[in-house]
Length: 267
Image 1 (cartoon, rainbow, N blue to C red):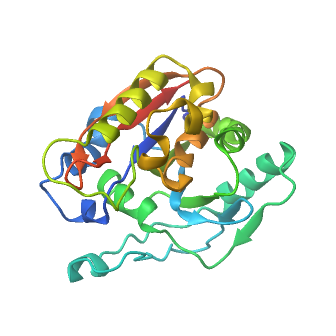
Image 2: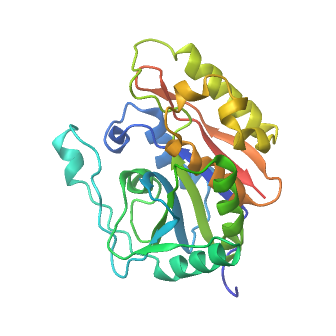
Image 3: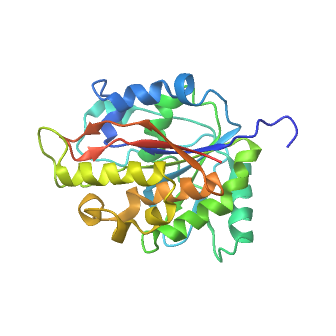
């Protein structure tokens, strides 16, 4: 596209706890606030987020004309978090293009949601990365009844969007067992999985990532449900070909059971 800066990268961002939105003690918060300065200085034309917090039976994209609503889809947190807003414009043109690409890749059914705004998997990292809320954003859902390879192929279908200036990032969590909070250093089962994730991606063993349930140590302990890992598969697929992975952040939260490992994938 003439005049559009083509991009080569996709990202997987571990968004951890919703308190990332207010807690300055979290290193991941400072990483995201410095994202433009230190990681990705280009300004995208629009942003497609694959969030762990939107599960549907078929791929669904929100098509919003006007500003996105801010969805506070968490419970029992400090009152100030429910007052935060991220009124980024919707991205109906991007949504239309993504639907075309998914359908042309053989996806039989893609649904549209014209009411749903941005869940906290999208707006919490975005408010730190792009606080001006001036870049159009839309979201793509995950399908928890499907597997990693399926989500990798969704990403693969969307890869050409990068050349149209679209920033694609998966927002999930490298580890995500919220029933196992603990104090002290990272739990051994979480650290072993996180180490495996870093080693496997940095060495380009993406088929192992697609089959993480059988390839990774303590897979079911770290991801009792898969929705926080599938955004990674989409990000890898959307990078295209055999991308080079780079670790861009690593820290821990939730008393050592929640990894904030985040990765860049370059075509």
